[in-house]
Length: 331
Ligand code: CP
Ligand code: NVA
Image 1: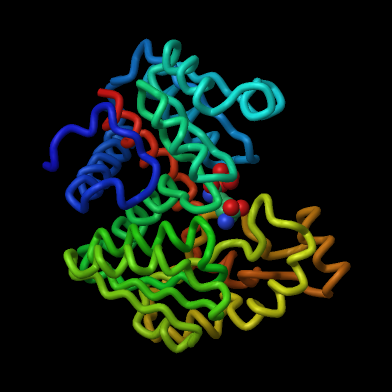
Image 2: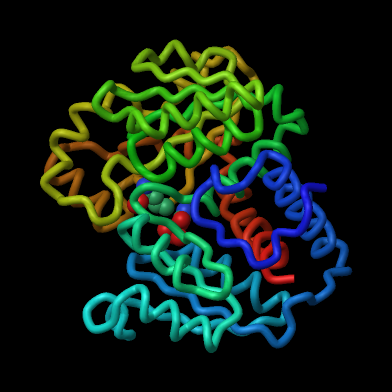
C-alpha cells in the first residue's frame, strides 16, 4: 500500500507514483467485484460533488454520476452556459466558491492550466475529467481493463496506441503505461507523435519502472502487442478544417483486421476510449462520408463489432475506476 490519497488532486498521471496507481487499480477491482457480488458498502454518504463539463461528455459524466450515486454522494452538474465559469467568473474564484460548498470538483475543459488553477485554489480534491493535454481517468480505466482482460502482470502487458498521439488519450496512455512498467508502443505519423516534453517524462519514468517505450511511424511496431488502442482523429475543440489534413496523415493508421493480424497475437484486443467513428450512423460520420467518401475512420466496423473489441467493457470500467478514485481521494 502506498498510503492514503485523501485530499489529493488527480490532474495528470505523473502526479501519482507507480505504487499509488497500483493501489487505485486494486481498489477498482475490489469495488467492481463487491458490486457484482451485491456487497458494495457506501462510503461517500452525505458528500456533494460538483461536476463541471465545459466540453460534452457521455461516459465521464455518467461514470462520475453513477459512481457517486452508488456510493451515496450527490452531484451537481455545471457547464459554461449554465454557470458563470469562464465568461463571468475566473477559475480561481469558481474554485474558492465551489470548495466552500462541495467535497470534490470534477472539471472537463480545454486547457490543462485551467484545471491546474482550479486545483491550486480549491481546498477539496479536483479531478481532471479531460483537457486537451491529459485524460487521466481514461488511462486509469484503460490500465485496469488491460489487466482484467489479459490477467497478465503489468510488466508483461504490451500495448500500442495507433493514431493521433499528440492529444490527451495518446499522452495519458504513454505516461500511464510508463508508470506501470508496461511495453508501450506509440505508433503515429511523425507530425502526430506526443510533444517532446511528454516523451522526456515518459523516458524518465521508464528508467525507474522498467517500462519499454517505443515511438515510431512504423506500423510493424504493433508486433507482439496484446492490445491496440486508438482514438478519434479530430478531437473536441479542434477546427473542422483540420479533417482533410488529418485524414491524409492517418488513413494508413486505421485499425482494421490486417493491423490486428500484424500483431501476430491471436488474443489481441481492440480498445477505444469512445466515441468512435466506425460507420455512418452519426452526424459527423455521415458528413465525413459526404465530404470524403469514407464510411469508417480510425477503426473499421468489422474490428469495432468483432469479438476482439472490448470497448464496452472498457466503457463500463470508467465507472468502477472513477468510483475508486472518488473513494481514495475523499475518504
Ligand atoms: N471516453 C470519454 O471520455 O468519453 P466521453 O467524452 O463520452 O466522456
Ligand atoms: N481525444 C478525444 C477524447 C475523447 C474522449 C477528444 O479530446 O475529443
